[in-house]
Image (cartoon, rainbow, N blue to C red; front, side, top):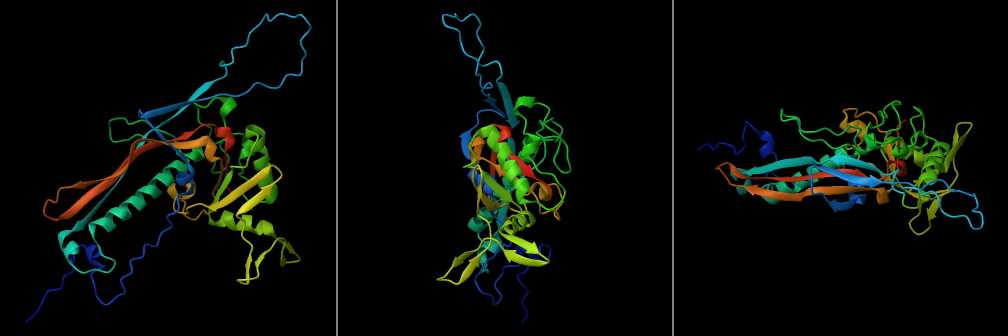
Length: 338
């Protein structure tokens, strides 16, 4: 008696986890971190275009007032205000598990809950890539082009320089990211460059204690090299953290003590970097200096999962959300492109 195999030869990927003689371990080999999304304030959106108001203080005046002088002129304290806004973008990932895959004993069970969980993880990476990107916002045109949000790489633009895009046309000059907040030197990133950016942001906000440096892999290595120096081709450690109990030596930089405050250093998801989402997967030098106090996520439709009727092929559904990125003060942030 002969038996046919259980693999769907037209879609072998769906059956690749059918049990043979393997350990019950399911590994998804992909970076999942979403530091920019995870650090953002969360707020509710009520329209497909979200707006917020920006303002600034006038310059200090050291002029005195004569005794007995009356007030003869008045200043409109709201004259310098401006409105900024961003489009809400819809995100969605679908999932399904065939009825046969649901029934078979599989490695790391290919059940509907696992499919749903994987879709959620993919959706979060989609959002991280969009809010980190250099793309500008766009409006749905009824001809297949949907709403798109403006990414942080565009919000923090200070004039086209290398990979840094042109300044958004609807952001008034007084609220555009300063060129000194950004680094586009086209060579190795230096500690001097970082300190210049931190100082520039401090001049705008008065504090950098909440500042976070989100660095892609190559940039993160260059920052860790701040703890080393080279003389005659010999690399020497300038700062070493030694744990006597474990016998480990730590040379990575996680907190950088600048002249103006402490900046935390975290890993950027290399799959979600501005260069990666633009198709340049070989560039791992992207970075952002961001202050979570000055940006947030506005949700029109919170992330949720919808199960659809089984039409005979198996359980299915989708996860979706609709949101946008609010950059409450572009001058509080910067970006790095080397």
